[in-house]
Image (cartoon, rainbow, N blue to C red; front, side):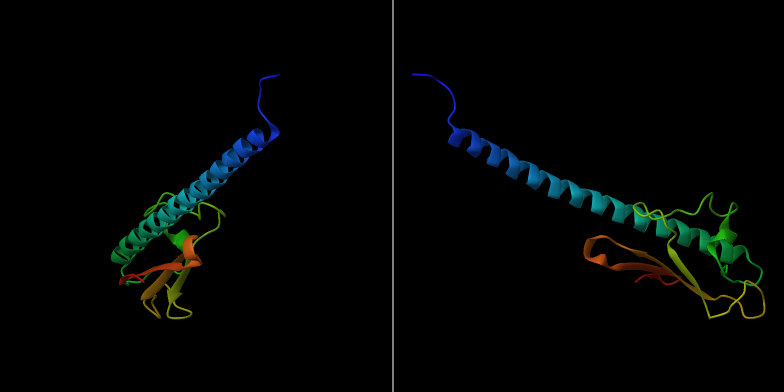
Length: 129
């Protein structure tokens, strides 16, 4: 008579451990997604604030045609998406506008794609959409 674990007992323990690891991995990935989405929203708000400062200091009351115009006076660096390291989508309006008196940029959309539900998070001069 030898003491020890049966094959069935070992398989039950391994399946329980596997289930716990699977649940933990899913939960961890959701926490990471939520964290990156929060970073995206914070980045968009920072860029939006810099855009408003640019407009208030621009003698024509115009937004810039691209985000590089904000450097380094209004923002030290343009934040990028925390996962894919790409720029956020920025569009100045009306189409073909310039940061000058003739055809000034009077509106903008700044957009990030969130991981949860793959929805777009957009900010413009009137706030969030």
